[in-house]
Length: 192
Length: 123
Image (cartoon, rainbow over all chains, first blue to last red; front, side, top):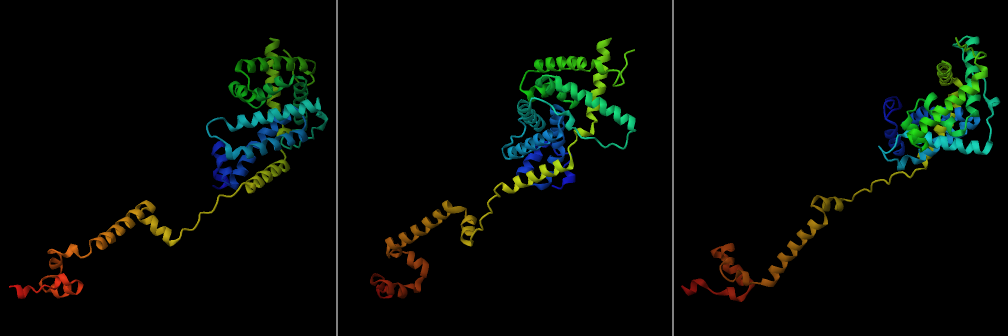
């Protein structure tokens, strides 16, 4: 099946095609799912190089799983997020820290320089605040509020109850607000 | 009030994080992942090519496979056995005449002396 005809093909069907040697399915899966694995790893780890390693490893594991993939049992994205989250956990336990300085400068010509600077400052501030959260709170907040996963999906990814997810995200948001309290005005937020 | 403010600020920061271009993978990473995917596809054992079927196998299959063919063989062997075991007795009564007609006696006499009876002399 040509690549341009696979945009609407579900992830699990693409995995079956991939396992049968379909080259277009390899491309579609790579372009569709690598950004999700990378974004999650980057937001949790705060380091592009580390996030790239994690995303690549997660995708390789997905491709290796393809021949044994059982359709209808689990969402492919849920499986991928779980593997990515576990790989991030392994990295965090090894490094015990986040190298925010390693974040490269973005290129964005569409916005004004001032707007770009403020957006970057806000994203950096959030990334720094996320890094202060306990690991599970961080993973849950990123999945819920940045990547837009539902609580039941997060429960499946993290292999905990929905109630535990709700508790983690609520505590995570309170901790983020506290961590950012001193920077509100600098980030352009004024109360009143 | 402060809680609402914090929620609004966090929602705004989450939105900024979603549009942060640094959270998108580099083309180099995508190329590496695709390369890994393709090498894994090559590494998978290719499905075994279908063996070409011989003409004899095709004939056997057309007749319904070996079970059907054994039935045909058995019927043939049985026919031969009946023919051999019965010898000339099957033609002893009227069968030979039914087959060969009235002028058959000269042929039958070639097969066995018991057919050498001269019917015309008996009349």
